[in-house]
Length: 404
Image 1 (cartoon, rainbow, N blue to C red):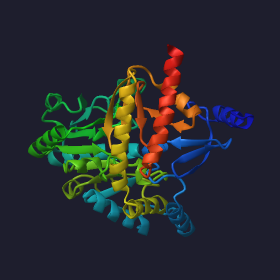
Image 2 (image 1 turned 180 degrees about the horizontal axis):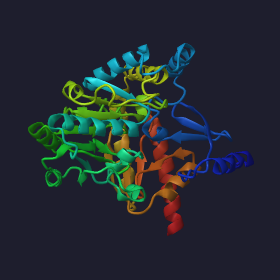
Image 3 (image 1 turned 90 degrees about the vertical axis):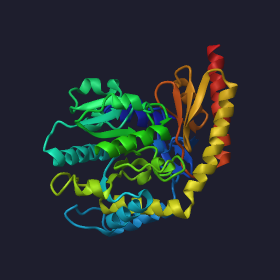
């Protein structure tokens, strides 16, 4: 590390609130699926801003769309219509099959909106305010108070209690545990279609179908968090489309704007007609012209570049190479995931392996203490996978050798 980079890091530690234990690198620019630090060192990026930069860095068409919108108008207010929001909402409806869209600034805000939607939907049915939401253990939905309340990890919540009330927790893929939490007050069942922070656990088709049937029978809202696993990451535009099991409410963010902060929660017409109304919810910045120009262009580029086909092809190759790697090391217990959202589960903490990979020019991230998560750009190639595997294998060998 140069003295200049160390100076930047020291300045950051003096100015920024220390809520992250950051890796000791300052990134300066990106090109394709590579990042470059302020010293000019090149890194293969298998994090993509935590599943955000689906189209890779410095996509010229994407950049030009944003520059064009900046020259027109960046922000007005939701008291007025704007063309980018109209176009983005129409395209988002088409790729999701949902009927109503509310644009937010983040995934956590999308979850907040989904929670309010569920409670208002139930309130309009019986006028009561004691309704309950069932969420999943080991889930992660965001850091705001509402999102934390439905995040199934006590460690994230304990310092900020009390949370919003009437939240019950069940286990993903254990329908009996869901039924054990259902009461006549249950208004919604919320879960990630593929758990991310919780360890890269995909919901099974059987579990999703049983939840869908339960929700239909009791007029409970099925709400799916697609913030990380959506927007093509597992090979369908949204993960639930793999099973054709449609939710009543869904959330999206991350790759939705490919770097511009934007999220959304969507719902069916039935829910939209009987939940949030004028005055119930709002946002100053959400759905502004710049963010929605990004959404609109991202959706166009997904189609133009046939991103889903690439995810399915390269995702299968990534699974194969990770399985091969797992078979060679006794410290690796298993691989799990779908598409380009994969995890290698180790029998030990992985922080030192990730650091060793970073030193070799590979950017990785964990999911819990013992899982390396792979959420690269959706435009990576088999050659990039091979490059990643080579560096990761060297890094594991280095760390295992040091410990033996």
